[in-house]
Length: 237
Ligand code: ADP
Image 1 (cartoon, rainbow, N blue to C red):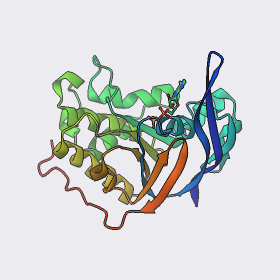
Image 2 (cartoon, protein in one colour):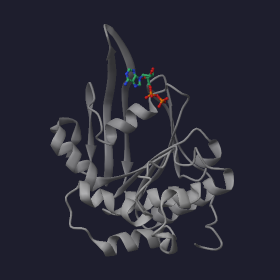
Image 3 (cartoon, rainbow, N blue to C red):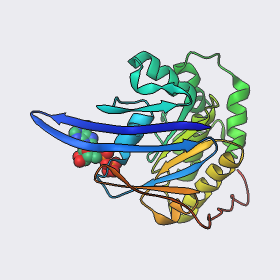
Image 4 (spheres, protein in one colour):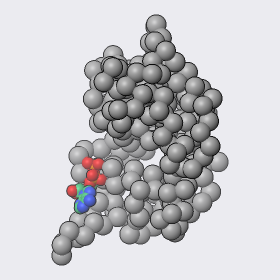
């Protein structure tokens, strides 16, 4: 079953009186349980695509269906609701709140979505990223890799079917980036659909399929022949 179905998707930004085309009619679908890398040079439309299928923005043409719902036609409030339920986001710069512990950072999406605060779900998410013993540390007391693991746990806490990473290894050294990819691979093997924007070919090789964009168009769509398997961190925190 397709969890994401994008049809002739278009986005043109308007800057004053100038139209800036960012996506020029893109179509593809992603099945449940896929692990997709999105690549392409700067300005090729990757972030625009991510913002659209992540329900953060509206297209100027075409449609996208998210887990059976045509999200391009929803009101802002309904799109926010579907975003909270269906998608967990992980960003390059972690985006953790500095004064809150790992535990409280992970709990935040439950507060936004108005869900009951489920302490067990937070514990489960911490366990999934191997950070149970760091739950009371603030971001400053954690390494970059650990902060990104907290961010992944935060993305997982509402148990969304889809995880989106926007250059999730971009601020990390190669070894730590591989550890983060090991976590995404584990989550994918457990059934999550994972989509990652990256400009690093090595990171894309950890995925199972690569979509390449150029000038707002889908340039190629290929399966990864030999998926690189990232070893999880030997000693978990
Ligand atoms: P990428 O993520 O691949 O670098 P983007 O989606 O950010 O590409 O950008 C695609 C094009 O859209 C670029 O020409 C960029 O300058 C333009 N663009 C992106 N966001 C905006 C915006 N908010 N307003 C105007 N133009 C934008």
